[in-house]
Length: 246
Image: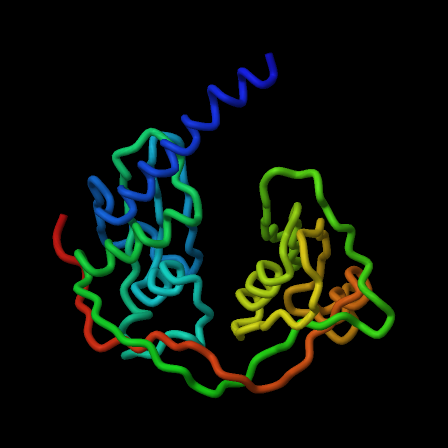
């Protein structure tokens, strides 16, 4: 019975993934882009069943970063890219919920079609952080049982917590880099996926008892960040325009 279930469901999963890949290459079936209703500084990306995506209060600069999973220092272009904010409602045309792997090419196609984005890549020497194992040793627990990777960033009253299941060190480095606004390079030499759970104070004051992200990494995971320089891939915007009408 168990073998029958696997034989029946695996082809369906592969077919769904293949369909999403094709749709990602062709772009969203429909996309509405309008000036942000609430011009706040907070941006959210929400994905729903039915292939629906809702992006709230995003700048063109933020959309570019999300489309290629880049840090702020990895996008070079005119200052107006980080000006106007947009609300986006889009549908992939497929019933499956959009995952991160397929969201990126969909956003890239949207940027080309609706913002006329043209760009090239350069490699530049920049300040980076190296994520390494602390001299006391890593305290991470390897997870060999979970079938998928889950990684979330949760924000509380002045604190930030990163929680993950079966997370690679490269993925953790990228998530930390997003919080710090600087590229973080994995130099831990730790293979596999690990469960992570650590919390720090977003803007620790001198009298605060909560740790900074640097202290939290060392005390809670046995990892540390070392400041260095290295080659960084940078997306250079050649030209772009404000969103075309719906």
